Image 1 (spheres, rainbow, N blue to C red):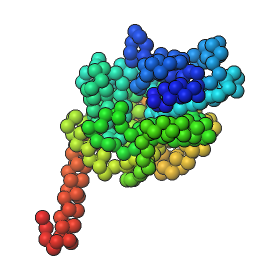
Image 2: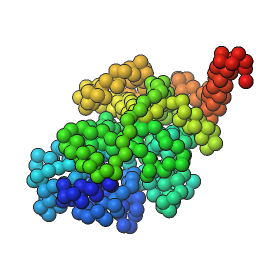
Image 3: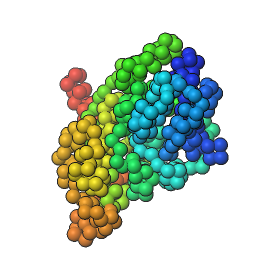
Image 4: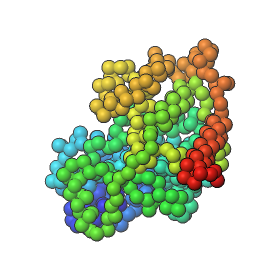
Length: 387
């Protein structure tokens, strides 16, 4: 995205770029800016994992008489921008979007880093990657700590995410001209840093095509066809049920030891959904999670009025998984009240559940055995003997 923004300034397509730099007094706090030079755009590179009020600079855009503008933002920011677009005095507006899988306030970021990283004070930004790990990039620009998803204490992170994110159904950033993200491409391996990793691009309209054709014309663009493999549905259902139980206070998460989590992440990266199927896994899970939470808070009519048709189709696809959970946590009670009530009635099953780390070991042993058996059978069929 930084490269695209710099090129648009260089070619004179835009006079300015609305992007997000770091606050000079706190590099983890976002600071929306109007960048008019390549140096200012480069200063905004990297993820700012906190809620950012990008639209607060739009009044300054008008005051400075800027007529050709590039706006960079996540789905909620782009939705707000489109709602006021007709009132802006712009000759041309370009919008580049990024995918967003939840965000939160600055205080929530501190909690997340403290719970996930061994060196939270050293982390500059992070990304949830396709190898089932969170990649935490350190301030030195070289060190990248990788934490398997299964090692995160989910029950201690429920307040990290902003309430507004729990009612969002626009992970795909549907109103941007071009969307850029990581989730839709296969993981390239542990030796490829996320700053060098392939990204996938969705071109949504003619304005987006104009941006993409411009970038192609530079001769610096490397393109490959998208790929898709694996089956996401079972992963989506299991992730949803586990996360929802934690959200409702029915269970405490059982973070895996780091070494076990790494084994499981390696296995899933090889046999789980990849490419566009992994992106669909992430989209489906977030849509279902947010549907349940919104339904319980707003009720059926308001929830379905709030949801786009694309999200409704996803809910229909997983209805057998979703329907039994609709009444859990309903009735306006807090999740703690419901959790305690269900535990008293023997529903929780918390004491009977297999700990997450034990399940991971069992799963890993089972998968390894299945792979070994597959190799032996193949060897017998091809060579007439076992290895």
